[in-house]
Length: 267
Image (cartoon, rainbow, N blue to C red; front, side, top):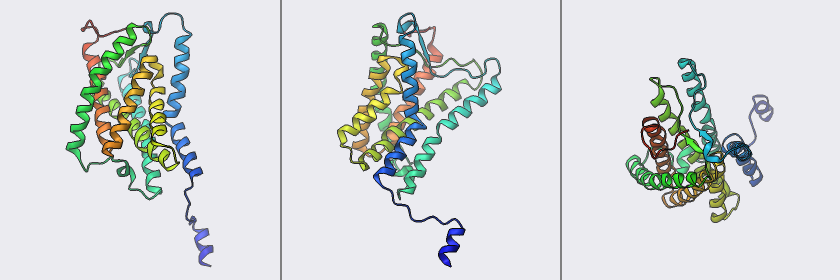
């Protein structure tokens, strides 16, 4: 009678998490997030290669208007896009709790060590940011990269807050999914540390391929550095800080300097 009552009430049997389940879970998370972005980026890159003209004559715009001339509708779409892009992060938190972990705390995305996380993140951003900018300018000059346009938003009051929110969204999504979650799952699936590092780094490079060869290679190298730092610190939070700072400087800096700094490529 008790078993029947539990069945009628919707009680579920205890779930056994096997490698097959974890493999399917990881593929689904990637298919709903950055794995799909990687495939989209590949298609975009093929389109750029087969388009007349060189790569550097084409543009890859990161933050653009969804409703030109309608600022309030545009703002609604911007916030909608940022919020829905973070759904995979909530899914990862849920899946980590289902396996018995303490949510995102299991991968070091919490507020237990705010000042060390901020300090480490700022140092990483300073080092990668300067090298990354020099690399981008070099590969674009060589014709191996599109001209990256970090923002093309209208000049309205919400422009800079939206750019900051977009940077934070990118940082949280990428570091939680591609570093913390993916490395955890690949380790549970028996992948060696070196192969898992390669998979995470190549994935990061792949969903930046729409920018060109430079975007792929530069972000793949950044992925290697981030994986090594994650394994050293055991925390995703400093990487989120570093990534957010890099994107904030890129987005806001471009908005302030485009057309004013001769060294900054514009379309």
